[in-house]
Length: 80
Image 1 (cartoon, rainbow, N blue to C red):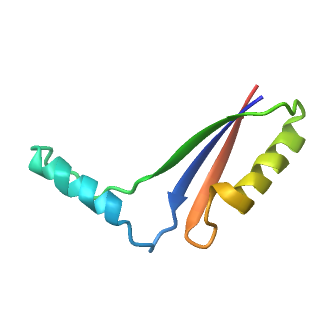
Image 2 (tube, rainbow, N blue to C red):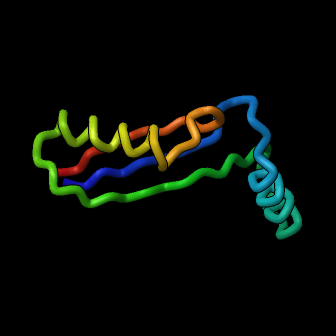
C-alpha cells in the first residue's frame, strides 16, 4: 500500500522559505502571487494491507518523525 503525506506549517507560523519563493516569483515577473506557503510531500510504500492499520502506522510515523506537530499539520492519503 502507498501512503502520501503532505506536511504544512500551521496557520500563524512564519514561513521564511515561502516568503523567499514569493519574492523570487515576483522578481521573475509572476505578478499577483499574494502568498506562498511551502511544505513537504512524502510518499511511503508500506507492507500493511489493512487501511485502518496502515493509516494508524503512518500517523504514528508522522507524530514521531515526519512532522513537527508543534508547528506543522499533516494529511495522510492511502492509495491501494
